[in-house]
Length: 316
Image 1 (cartoon, rainbow, N blue to C red):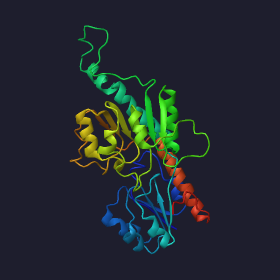
Image 2 (cartoon, rainbow, N blue to C red):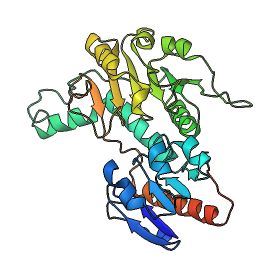
Image 3 (spheres, helix red, strand yellow):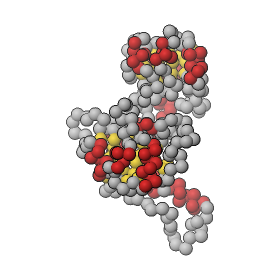
Image 4 (tube, rainbow, N blue to C red):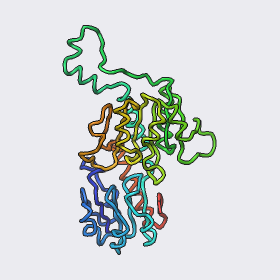
């Protein structure tokens, strides 16, 4: 059984190993695979592992040996799952490996917007505290989160953890669920438009679908309170980036923080690159070593299940 990993350096830049997967077949690992080399590298593989390398219909149909595509991520929009199903190719994802890490990163982005720790640490290093006449100083207004309202858009595993943490910070949490869960969910559920009108903080955790693409745009931003904060640790295309920039420039948004953008790596003309009151991290919410080790173990378990004839985490 030949296994090929097409863009392995994102999950494993060299600080962990592929042993669990290599024990399951003849493994070849490529750090990065340009799209034009995909067919050449996967031509005789029965199992292909991808993170962001795209498997479109033409690619899938050009790989006659392929039987399984494993996505090293929760989102699987890089694979044409319908085309794979037509060929009898199983596609799997890894649904929960980064729940805690993404929650942690979301809260870190929020606290950076409200506490400005990097700004003030840099000011101290520049000698401003040494020169200060008072025992304290702040360069920008700081924000207390207690008793403010947070709208959590999307209430899957990550959204649930984020909601619980925001509640622990003393915030009043409302949720905008992609699908309303059964039973008592512990928080008021609202339509997006209603939640945006009352929220001081809006944080996005919904999947990227045709319905959610561009969810935050000039119209929905106009519903938000002046001076509110927006966080996106889900998928870049959930927002219209030029509209978010306009809202930052106008002051409708007091701050925006994201771990994702519409095209990654970020393009030099992305309108958020030099936007005011904007914090962007390079898609690192999933990147703690412990999280990536869990990812690779889960990928190996997905392959084992497929080889046994009982695939798990199948998305097609």
